[in-house]
Amino acid sequence: VTDVGEALTNSAARFWEAVAERRFLLERCSSCETWIWYPRGFCPECGSSDTFWYESSGRGEIYTLTVVRRSWGPWESLVPYVLAYVRLDEGPCILSNVIECDVDSVRVGQQVELCFVPSAIEPETTVFAFRPAIQP
Ligand SMILES: [Zn+2]
Image 1 (cartoon, rainbow, N blue to C red):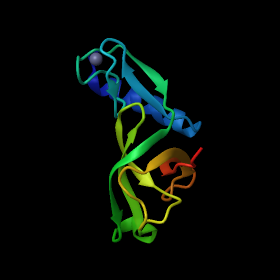
Image 2: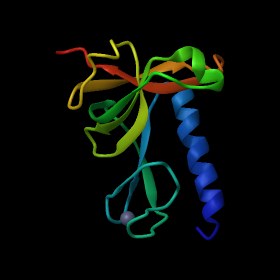
Image 3: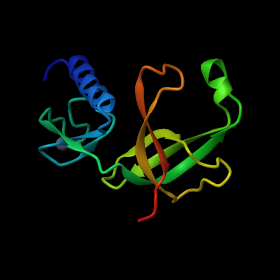
């Protein structure tokens, strides 16, 4: 791939198409097996553009989090909400929201799982978030 911008655009489009189908795809390097997050169409470790898609288990744990209690614009009415880095079982660390939880009891290390919800800002758009995992 010579056009990095085009690779990025194509990868992002593929990713969001899958989210609309309620699937969460991770990109992975075929050459060195690095997990690639965010999707970008090439490997940030070895530079290979030979990547493939892998459907995530959607399971992970909270790596770090913050409770947003003041916000602005379209997010103002959504407070308080949890913004967290979630480390997926596959390895990548993803910035997202943790929903369907008591914001004051969410903690680092907590097991969470992916879910798909209408965007709070654009309800016709499906987005992903995490929620506390249902214990097996
Ligand atoms: Zn690589």
